[in-house]
Each structure stands twice: as structure tokens, then as C-alpha cells.
Picture 1 (cartoon, helix red, strand yellow):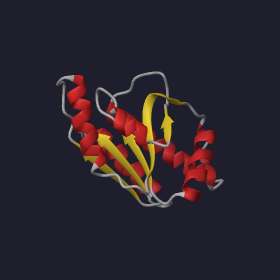
Picture 2: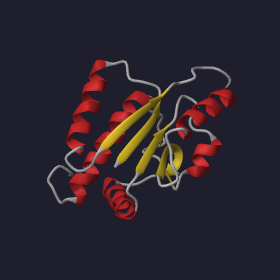
Picture 3: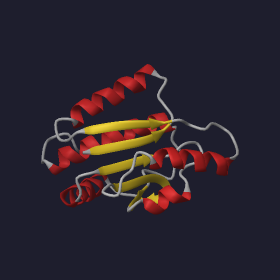
Picture 4: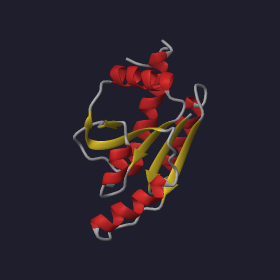
Length: 151
């Protein structure tokens, strides 16, 4: 089971459609759930991080293998990412990815993570990044199962 916890929601229909398409593709391999928590907006940074972190924590349990997506995290090629996910899923039944809000993630959430991943040094809109993460999860399953898709 994969759970993706994200701060904020999706307003754009084209992104909603892409998300639904990748969820459908991934569902062939595993159950996947996306949990949205409220974005605190542009309030004071530490307050926003604290409140968003508390909301995220309500959706976590001790058995979760937590992966945070953050610019300071480790970068992987798609093949390396697939290998890492495969290794994690062999040993853990609950894989949780967390995408923070405008200010990132609270220190508490980062400390709970067992893996910190960065897709790039670039900054992406959180809504678009959700699609990127889903695509890479799908690509990983295709790689793991030696199916055509990955180039």
C-alpha cells in the first residue's frame, strides 16, 4: 500500500485528470491513496509548518515507512528510485510519501522520515509535483516488473 500525504489541494482539472490516470495505472500493482491536508497559506512560516505538520501526523502510524520529498533530499535516477522502492516494499507494507506546502515540511515530519528524496534542485508547484511523483512511482513499477515503458 502506498499513501501520499500532500499539503493543499488540486484546483486545475488537467492535473486532476493526470492524477486519476496515474492512480489507475498504479492500482494494477498496489493500492494507492492520496490524503490532502489543508494548506495554512501565507501565514508566518513556523506557524504554518507546525500546523501542517500536526495535520500530517494524524495520518501516520508507527508501521509506516516515511519518505519525505524535499529539495535537500537525495537524488536518484529512475532506475535507482525503482530499486530503492522495491527494496523498501519488500520489507514494509506501508509506504508513505509526504509532500509539504509552500514552506516545506516541519522538522518533526522530517525527523520521522526514513528516506529524504529530491527530484531536482528546481522548485516545482506542489500540484504539479504530485503528478511527477505518481509518474515516477508508476515508472518504478514498470522497471521492477521488467515491463516496457522506461527508456
